[in-house]
Amino acid sequence: MIQAIAFYLFAAVVLLSGAMTITSRNPVHSVLWLILAFFNAAGLMLLCGAEFIAMLLVIVYVGAVAVLFLFVVMMLDIDFAELRAGFVRYALIGLIFAIFLAVEIFFAIGAWSAGGLKLDQRIAPTSDKMSNIEAIGHLLYSHYLFVFEGAGLVLLVAMIGAIVLTHRTRGGVKGQKIGRQVSRRPQDATRNMQPPVGQGVEL
Image (cartoon, rainbow, N blue to C red; front, side):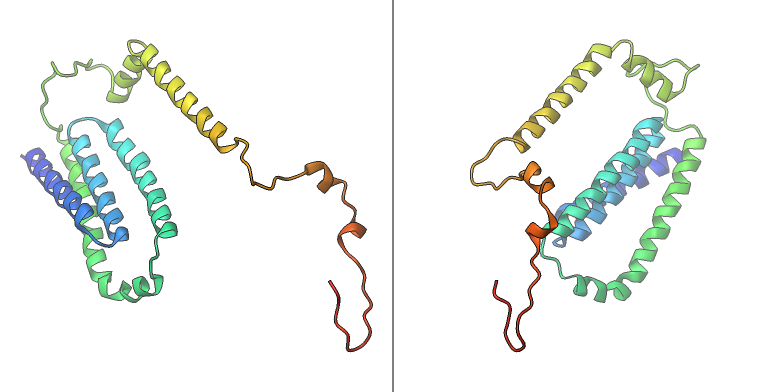
């Protein structure tokens, strides 16, 4: 019973926060709604018995959203004075959301401790003697080893391509001359001037 209630609660919050993510006009609010959606999606994964995916959602996606939040703040013209002015006005709403999220976390832990949802084992058969993470690791490094290595090679090629495109030779760019900078003496960089009284320095 508690598993079904937790499922419908998390699913409703995911749908609501997803809708608010795409309808909010403030990009900061959109990112915060997206973080709430990720947390509740992690709760759904926890109910399904996929603890590894739930932790990935919290650690990887919420961490990536934090980086996205940083880029949005840096790239968009946001009035920080206006945001700070509304802090006191929205403090109660933020506190309510924080308490609601904490209650959801305890609710998810209780539902997970009760056994989670009953899934069809024919979809993803696993052994009862190993945990979920052990089963993922066993399949990933045995049956799907070549696919995993292929994905790693694709990411490696993409990383090398990004480095090559970044460091390609372009015209109109003033580059550094390391040897000239290292061999430069202090007397070549500064001049001691003794101008007369009332006369400026000529550059």
